[in-house]
Image (cartoon, rainbow, N blue to C red; front, top):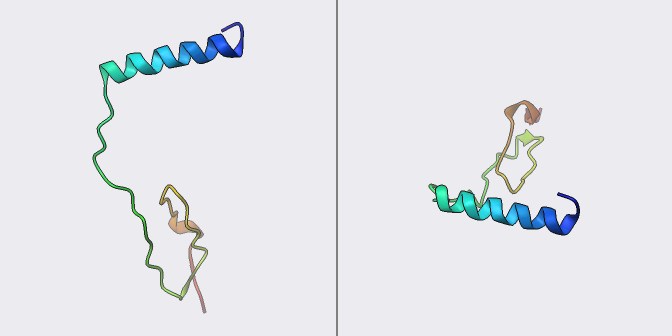
Length: 60
């Protein structure tokens, strides 16, 4: 698109078209809490509830 306004309008049109073809239907609720042992270090809460095990360590 030639400028930011035109680009934003094209994105809105694309979003509307997608919503008509494939509406979003949530199939789960996000996790809102975490229960972590005090023996674990490296845990960082985040809004995506993504916690790679490689970053976690046991305290010694």
